[in-house]
Amino acid sequence: MAPKTSSATLRLKQDYLRLKNDPVPYVIAEPNPSNILEWYYVVSGPDDSPYAGGYYLGRLVFPRDFPFKPPSIYMITPNGRFKTNTRLCLSISDYHPDTWNPAWSVSTILTGLLSFMLENSPTMGSIEMTDYERRQLAVQSLESNIRDDNFCELFPELTMTIQKEIEKRNLARANEEQSPSTDCILPENNILNSVVYNSVVVVGFALFIYLVRYVLYNMNIE
Image (cartoon, rainbow, N blue to C red; front, side):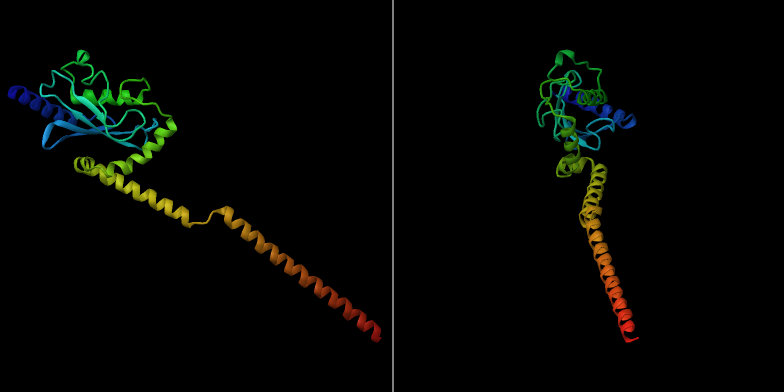
């Protein structure tokens, strides 16, 4: 058992260096500091997808005889594509050891996972949701992730980015609530204008009557 564990550890360390030197688009990953056989990854939703603006935490669990056997793959953050905290049935996961290639690396696994996420083909562990529902989950994913201890510990820079984004959203929401809308202001202006207009008409009519009486009074005197 010990040689297999050492082999998996050595391979995963090599994969980690490759991943740092050649990052996978939209995906970052970090091993558990106390267990290199457990990794956490974060998928950043591509802009042209219903996951845009969202961040999705997941977990990879590697067997002791990796790379000769594939890892288990889990998604933690609600996303609308995969069930959470459930082993996913993918061609790159332990559900299909017959299709696994030992030459595949962690980068290969993360690239394949992103590809499956952007598809809609059904598989064990997948769910069906509308694009609208997935966009809603993308918004909610920020709050979900900063409540996760593993996310905050392993991805501190991304945690700070998300916290700033949440603060920006909260500030914008507060400004919208404090600022009266144009629809509310216009009726008040209309009422004020109406009162002023009516007042001017009344005053003008009163002056007209006064002048008429003044002229008639002078005519009677003459």
